[in-house]
Amino acid sequence: MRQRWSTDDIPDQQGRTAVITGANTGIGFETAKALAVRGAAVTLAVRDPAQGKRAAEAITATEPTAQVRVQHLDLSSLASIRSATAEIRTEHPRIDLLINNAGVMYTPRRTITADGFELQMGTNHLGHFALTALLWDLLPPDPASRVVTVSSAGHRMGGPIDVDDLDWQRRTYNKTAAYGHSKLANLLFTYELHRRVGNGGPLALAAHPGGADTTGSRQAMAHNSLLTRTAFAAIRPLLLQSPVMGALPVLRAATDPQARGGQYYGPRGFQQSKGHPIAVQSSAASHDPELQRRLWNLSEQLTGTSIPA
Image (cartoon, rainbow, N blue to C red; front, side, top):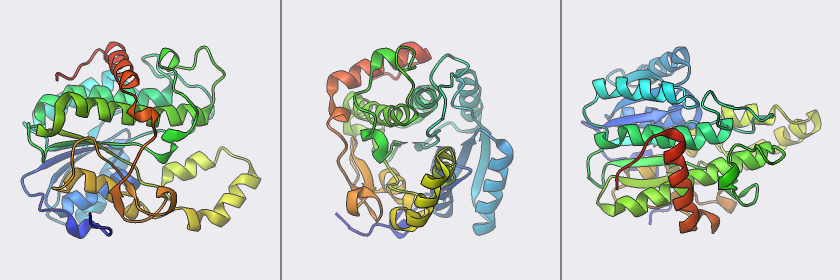
């Protein structure tokens, strides 16, 4: 496999449509920009339309012919997801790429969504599960058609996931573990979707950005002590890479003709923290078929959506 895959390797995206969640900043923005520059029609699905508009303007400033639209989407609300997917369906008879990128990280207190879900699990996994289900029939059965879900190296944090207590009602809330479980759920979802669909397409893949210096990571660090923040600021350049580099694993999963369903892409450097993207390994827990099935069935029940095999 190529060791230094970059945006220069993205095939022509003319005639293709991509929907990217959380595309107003960070990894999502750089992913949207790269795809738009290569010719894709890109929908920025964002919680704040004003920020989305500014992101769209920044993309068209770089590529004046870029096709970019903004779609309001709050992944913490099933009602918003249903409304957004209805609007997307009126705009696009087909979607070639669905990139489940948006997320919340390290919420300091246990917060519940309007639908009763713990915020990190509700947004990062359940929201994307519902979004994928409600747009699934727009994805053609072609290996070039893909669902890419952005996980994290943090999927290894927090110990075993408790499928019977996703909302942390019976345990003391732990923001780090809750985040790690939501990112593990992203992988369990991807691998189960791949098992159900196979390599005929659409392909289900996952990616993680490594240590990316994004707004989300900075906001997450803001909840820590002054000492921790000061120490991390000093070593940040050694541990983190730019959002441009962090987007490369997502872009490779989305566009590399050699990619296969069920693969997981991340940086090739030490502990998958920095570097150009390659296929990497995820935790043993993420490959537990029984856990995958249990989470899938529960996700269908909680969201009231399903993805046909």
